[in-house]
Image 1 (cartoon, rainbow, N blue to C red):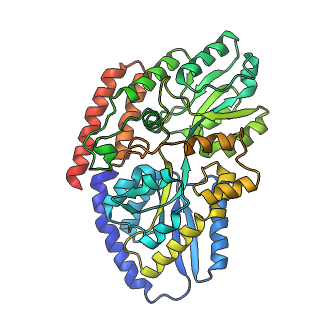
Image 2 (cartoon, rainbow, N blue to C red):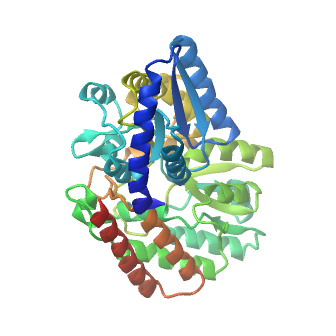
Length: 439
């Protein structure tokens, strides 16, 4: 949509909210909190509805109404429609990549200091990401990181039943070679064309994604898409594709499609979000094969500094009525409380963001050493606080991701990595400069 349309969204939505405020003062009954989230699949949508129902029973003066959307970008598109129709939500789930755009829009209020102080037991890496200009805007809710899922049943056919899972890209390639030599009738690796993985590889190597200390010390003016931190894993992927080892699901960011390819039982490795651990473990049991979970493989020699927060936070519009804003904040704090974040982890695999949730999960027998959930969580918790792992912050993040997606596609079709990334950087820099000129 993004920057030019977003300016129109700001004007229209503020007008719609002002009209809504005039009308709401005379309304009796519970305050309605429409909550937009992106979990449209049945298990997670049902969980959201159950949490809302429980909250509503405990707070008869509030009615939380969850509304599922299909993706984070689709939520932004829906906000444009809301601006035109006056049907603004009271609480919105916004992805980490939309943070600066949401701040720049001036549509959302930062959290009051007394609320921000309630997050003292959150994982520091999460709070670092969502703190902008010293203020915490969104209430962090779901965070995940890339992990490697392995079909251990297929690996056994190649004589690799007890071998540790690959921890580097080079080790992963050698494992693919072994599968080929053993004539295992399977593809080696699937994951989608998705800039998120390259952002993570860059952070693991300590490389910035944009200038201005990743946009956190000052507004970003250029992207580092042509850095060796991006080029090296892209060259690796090109080689994997040429060898027939890589299975592309066909659509950018199609983690769901990659997961389904893996669950058919004829792909040895899946690289995707830790948020899919529950789905993968359940699906593999149905499919009759064993799955192990390991850390994200990185280029050999990478210092493994850690991972960037991937997920979302919950935002409250600035100009909704005070009573509605207070009700939305109460629900958001309940949803992100100790017990709910622990239950969310058990269902989805998203990382438990509070130390108190981790403690509760361990008391319940979860996060035991060597288990799938523990492998993902410990990988994220090992993140070191650096400018690289704090994550990039700039308003045209979605558009720059789209530029990289197109570049990855070209490389997979045979284009030169160096020239393609040089052109991608030039286009990304144009987008960033144009965004800055408007905001």
